[in-house]
Length: 216
Ligand code: G3P
Image (tube, rainbow, N blue to C red):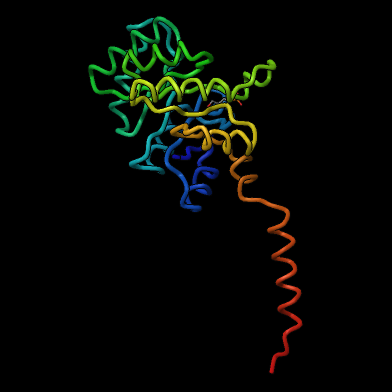
């Protein structure tokens, strides 16, 4: 399974890259707004930082023609940009047009398996079910991932499933168990994934016991 980081913070991206486990980046307008810097300045810094790996950049204009124009402009600026297209009828038209141009897309804000199926048929390279936001309204978010993976397996659909809106390590574990292609993980959860209390206890014990070994 590929691991993406879900942040627009360059320092957090560098940290995960140093672990040797980073396959790509997802951003959205909320995440970029936290950086308090111009949108494209942040996005280009990230694109350069992770060169060769996909960087998801969200389209923010409305209407098919505007979104296609926006996507084409972004595609000129970095060859690893993937256009995040919000799920809608217009969004599907945009995905279809961009696919013809060879511009990569990720259909975001996907909350049903039927939406994911349509996104794949329209030509999306990626589809992003938002699991945490479903959990927030008492729907089991990971069930959606299972359904999408199942449908894509049934028809050998090559659109990749990005499990998004991840809130805890169990979301990542379940994504892997279900055979999702990618989990996009916020920095806090990356941190949590490296931790285990027994690892800490074990390290402390070995340090203490090392001190007891005679020097000569
Ligand atoms: O990748 C989408 C993600 O950023 C949304 O996460 O926590 O705002 O639901 P959240």
